[in-house]
Image 1 (cartoon, helix red, strand yellow):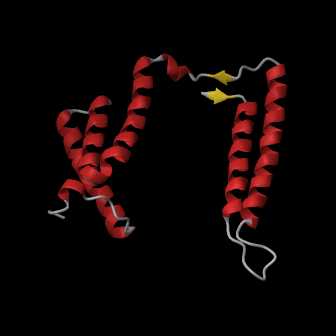
Image 2 (cartoon, helix red, strand yellow):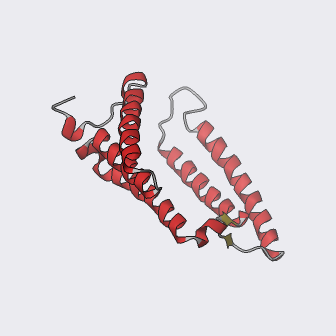
Image 3 (tube, helix red, strand yellow):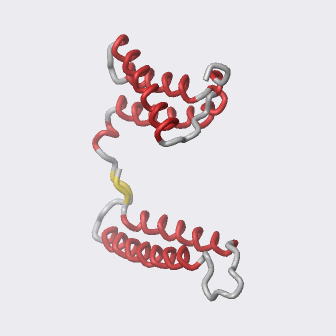
Length: 157
């Protein structure tokens, strides 16, 4: 999918205005002319200018006949659309149940279901999901020291 630059420019402007508004809550440092809000406000101002340029360019392209949104060819194939939404649903499932169930069972379930959906044989999918889950858990929890949720496995781990 490709959106017209005017759409992208307006989204960029809205995000920059929100960023500028959030900086109004930043505390001022006594005795200093510039506080912690300076850099985000400068960045937001630059983003507003860039968003304005994108919007101007997109409106010019729209006048020349460009559509607001052009869908990619893969959106015409239903199984690819379902695959796209399965990825989003997988993220949502992890967000909603990851803390309660734990990283290892949720990651294993997500990987196994996606492998099977994409046509991997059952034995290969199970072995790969187990190995990938354990490697990802080891990498994040041991090397990067990211506290992954233990959930149901808390008494075991």
